[in-house]
Image 1: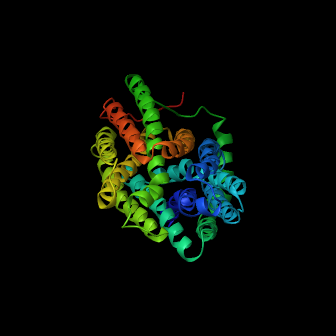
Image 2: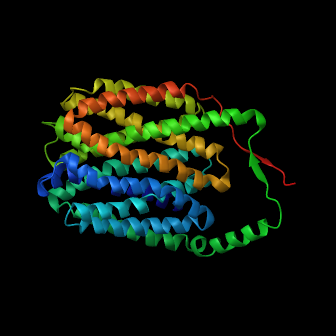
Image 3: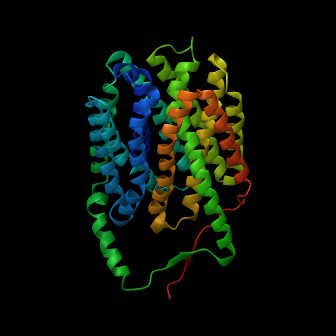
Length: 403
């Protein structure tokens, strides 16, 4: 039940962050008389918050309560999503989206730490959890499209808001002892640990240079992959509106197309998660980055069914990359610092996401999406080249005996 709630949290985390992408592309540009690129600017603060609050969320989870932070997450995104539904203009929407991003930032450093800690097979656990997040990406477009055509765009914020609050109550009920009692025991254990030298996690001398190389590669790949992922997930409803003429004409159909692509592409994470535990992260990086680069090169000028098919594969590549860096961190990070390291990783990831938004708007306004596809082909190719430098073996920290 705990793993299910963590997965549902991942679903909601990505869903609430992307509802505005579909609302802006299909409704608000007409209702508020603003261009798509102008509206994107108001989403940027939310993604900035999504990045900068990841690190403090992870650190607070390590020092207070990871389960308690998950309760804050569910209630926080619920209330802030409802605030988005009440927004009467772009400024109010930007403030509300900032609040959504601030609370949504909790999930990745905290939720992924809980997923890794409870997993027997790290790769598969991250893959299944990642599928829920990817379904949230597609579900945002589907839910928003359905709401636009039936109940209005504000319902697309109301519905996940109330669902998140309900899940927060369920999580608090299930994990009550961990939320209330466990933090006390952790503080007592911390005080006791001050009386004696703790066992230290370290890397053997022969692995330290290798660990430094892996760290640099992960930082680079994290930044580039974040830009590709954000470009794909945020812009996909708008891409489909422009390219799927004759296939998806209504908001609901565009939402269904986005959801189906995300759902099928999510299967890539099952394959990646399974192979991570056997083939290793280097091989998987080469496969998914190569797939992305080829598909982005093919995409310019495509429309209709061919555009839909190619989009399916570059989304598959984008989703397939997600568990790889998380797998590397899960293997190399020491347990007591894992949430903080995940937090630092997502500060970089979501800061890049925030930078990507205005760039997407600027490129679309001046050259259209074909130029964006060519840029993404180059960046994906660079990930392929850098991944060649990864070792076949990922070093894990050893535990030194207390002196």
